[in-house]
Amino acid sequence: MKLLCIFLLLSLSFSPLSAQALSLAEGLKTVTESGRDVRIAQSDEEIARGSVSLARSPWLPSVDLYARETWLRYQPEAKFSGTNVATSQDKFATYGLKATQLLYDFGKTSAGIHSAQFGLKAREIETSRAKNQAALEFIMAYLDLLESEKLFQVALDEVTRYEAHKKDATTRYAAGVITKNEVLQADVMLSDSKQRFLTADNVRSLKASKLNSMLMRPLNDLVQVDEVQISLSAGITLEHAWTVAEAESADLRDMDARIAAKEEGVKMTQAEYLPTFYLSGGYEYLENKYMVHQDNWSLIAGVSVNLFSGGASSSKVGIARSELRSLTLNREKVLDNIRLTVKGAYLDLQSSTQKMEVSKTAVAQAEENLRLQKLRFKEGVGTTTDVLDAVTLMTTAASNSWKSLYGVRRAEAILLYGMGKDLATAYGN
Image 1 (cartoon, rainbow, N blue to C red):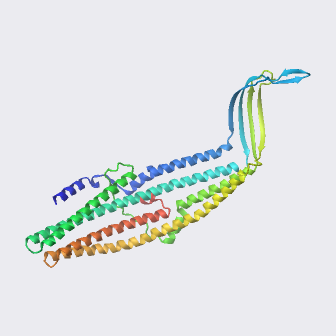
Image 2 (spheres, rainbow, N blue to C red):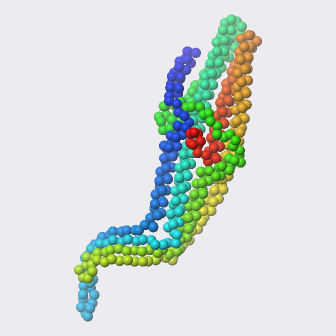
Image 3 (cartoon, rainbow, N blue to C red):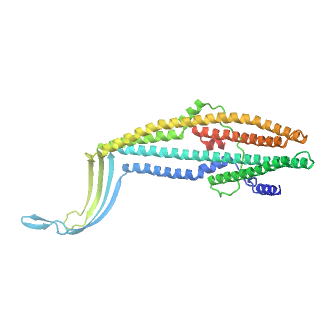
């Protein structure tokens, strides 16, 4: 008894009650703005944004500045009336500036830009999904901690009830009213209860460390969480949930963006069969004393056509079309998975709600049963076994009540996530 009291005092002195309270909205703001997974997704988004700039580059002029030195074994000469006349030095330097501008390529560059833009959109959706996934994981961890604290209190209440009964049993044994066996029964149940209490405390500590990890805090930091009071699933039907999910799901929007990007990729690949028109111009200076004009300006208008590339272009088109078909079929699979997830969460929410209603009645009945058994024991018409069983039933009913409550909260969050709702916004208000 003394050891347990000391443990309880230490536990309470280091409990989350001494820590600053953390609301669900505050935690969601932290993990969705600066969480590790979110920052990784944002880095990938920046890469995709750079790909858009890269895709635009062909529309901008290409400018080259060059300088070179040439050494020839023989000095270039030409024959005029049997006489060799030098036409160039055997050693000379060349300096120049050249600019080339794409004029038209039958939509190849435009398709590349559109493909990169859709790719960026997909990455932005991926970032949004990463934020929502982080939000869901945090909500689950937050609810786990709340539940573990309630179950810790249930375990503490059980220890208190067994201790009270042991005290009563010891008193009645000293008075010769009951047998030693009944006192031993109370001792065994109390010892077992203390072990469950220690387990509940360890679980609570581990859940708190997990929450700290998600918040990027030291694992052993004290954390106190506020109760979640809001309910966001009232009035939602399965058909409505499916309709919203199909319109707002990040997975589907991501697939649509990827399909659009691949369609533009097919166009870009097909444009390789078509000519490319360009304009090139520049200035060049050649150190050659035999030339009348050592410097010169040039302007070139040209066209290039890929007549044959060993089948590479046709292979690229075939690959791109196959990838497009694969994405289209995969979208149908993703849609079915979303519907299954939403239906599972919806059914879980319904059953958890029913369990919660039943558990409320069970708790009230267990409390009344415990009161009556304790009264019967004091009046000498009840046994220790009756009281111990009543305490066990009380613990079971209380545990089931809290588990069903947080089961409802979890199912609700999973349902909203499956519907594509922004959890940080939904729970942040």
